[in-house]
Length: 296
Image: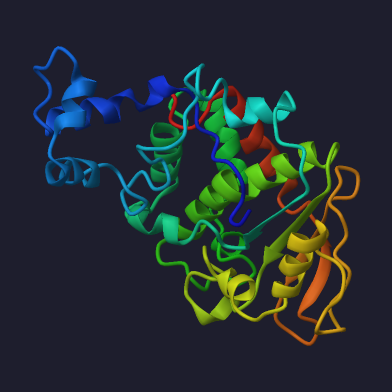
């Protein structure tokens, strides 16, 4: 599973506004059965309406319209609740992220330029039910200092606005790193889990090691390819390798949360501990358990 795991959305009622907008834009508002009406709308007209829905390049970023939401029937509960209750297929798995997952998803929020803007953005778009104290804590854990933001470990590089790297760090942890860590911690207690983080080519792009930057080492000849082939055949990413310099990839466990990190330098792979930004990521995870994303 690349670029994290689940996205912590709530139940189907949170998507009602998008359904209502779709009904209106397709001319089905006066129908006594709007779902039947939508099914009869010409494809071209329906596509125009769907394409008018918020996208990743809209101000609300990754808070998308058409995402899996719990309905109590087909999807009985949220992804997080299913994890906590152990309602997940018992199979070995690999999951990972790139280091700067949030940068490209923050481009539409370049008008956020002050601390007040950041607080308002996180409150109104992501956590409308959160308390002012929650937002104060969030703002403290994701400070204004660009040197602490994403792209990480690049100083002031990529600071398009005073708040861009702060927003990017927040979105990357909320949507990608936090869910990956929570998912890995829970599932590793009952099944084999391996996790990675990709940090290469930091300065090749103003967005750092951005979303999708790891695809080349998976789907083209690269140093993750051997691991994937081994995993497909043996349910273990370790085994025979073309490059004997590759290191053994340890299993992820809650007591020893180790990541295979792909980095630049003479040692292209290193093992690190998955504890970076631990307080901030734990806070976001707990906040989404209490207030799923964009829940009204």
